[in-house]
Length: 228
Image: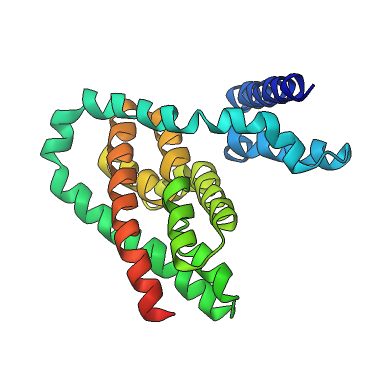
């Protein structure tokens, strides 16, 4: 029964995502980004039918296992545009370091101003890096890994939804700026959004996501130990 339930949950999740994707393709409105709408629909249905999250996770975890291969697949546009990456490597690195620093410090400042609990604060700091690394940083530093994953998801979905509008308002149109912005602020979800814009943007976003994760993995534990 558990295997059948897990399979059904997996199919149900994919079906919801495909429906939300079709809705987004039809109307192409920022608030209808499939990651956000499908997550919302699933949460509402779980609450409506009183289905525990652990029960849903029996099948949802199967999809979670695809996260690794999906991230690896992002290396394709990176390889395809390797000459561009070599040409603009220096500005990309500088942009990522500045963006990652702002992401870390903004989380620390916001949490400090609101006098948030230490565990929550530690979980919030690595919000702009990919989920596995953020969870490891939170775990090693005394935070809550699952809460860190929630903050990472919020950052990713928020970037995918509002990133294009913010970039437009800031008059950032060059693919280097677009890619660095998505990859540094919104990690894998942002990179997937960048891929909708173009291959070059996705390539820059991929390398930005990787560099940002490396930087955060080194800096966040040191910053937490010093400040907290």
